[in-house]
Length: 136
Image (cartoon, rainbow, N blue to C red; front, side):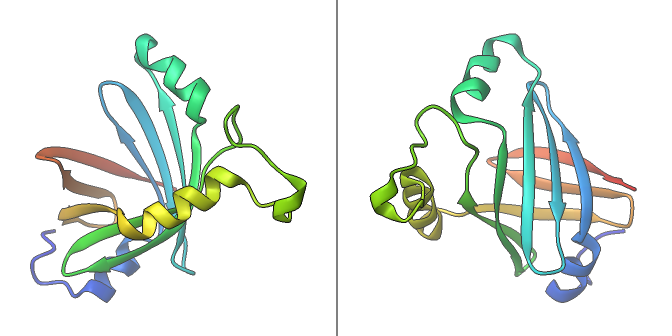
């Protein structure tokens, strides 16, 4: 089913749930929740990319919405890892999460929704097409 005739609200309703995207270098699992938040897990499958996962972590959370058939993701928190320090003077808020949260409001990820139905979801990002499968 093409998304050309669907409204942004209808696209959001189709997106709710868990999706899996496989690329050459990683597996991405993302759950879009009804409260417009999401949880994303990125697992590196290319051995030379594994150190990046160890440094940055692999679980991200944030908020999402659809605007003019474009999926917008704004990261709000990133995984605990070596550079994500917790300082008591900052009320247990992570320094890097603050930086990511502020940066995310300026630089959110935007994906063009190409096709979506109850089982398959294809998006385009930086001239690359990604196809996702709904997980039950």
